[in-house]
Length: 284
Image 1 (tube, rainbow, N blue to C red):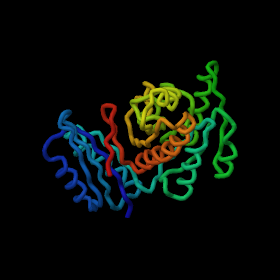
Image 2: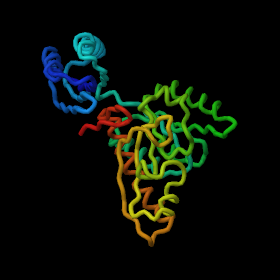
Image 3: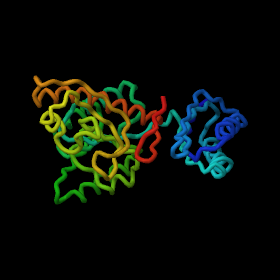
Image 4: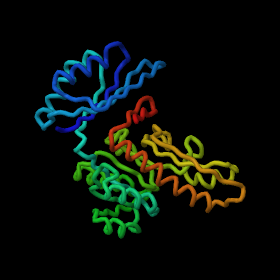
């Protein structure tokens, strides 16, 4: 018995849940999880189902094809199908900060982050020893304003070679261009060191300090062409005071960054997120 994860999005109308569950029942599938959400303003329906059944490669393909023809077309469904035991391949992009990278690698190696990490790429060499510590290939690709296109070409070649499914920017201090975003829509996760939409862009801790805020935060979100404006996955905050300096904001914020990024990555890898109109539907 294998577990299949099904994500469905379509215009809202009567009979969707009944049709889907009946389809699964007719094929001897056992539903072990089901949740749904209706956006009544947009008239949109979203559903996540986990099904246990006989899903060998041929059956899995047949299930998808038949589901799309019998239900997908009549209900105008957008469907995604995943086998739970086929883990996503996640590439890690970093620069010089190591706090998020350590947590990602430790969680993945202990089996708490359901993915494989085929390689780490960085525009600096500083974190290569960490990659060696975890026995993960490390690629240094320097990025400047003059070679950015060539650097991204190398990155895309690596992503294709390793058949990567998603990317995490673990404090990767470079803007990812549309060339990569178009290949991985809603599959590039960034951690921004502020409670978006407050203080986007560079040096948000400095901006927060200058503004005299009493709360700082961190945000994990999908990357879009608009800087720090993609669909938000997870957020959290921590209190600060007039007695804190910028360095205190940074130290407190880095703890949040690790936590919030990992939450977002776990949700993505467990196929619990759907994106819609620059927002996310996050299932429990």
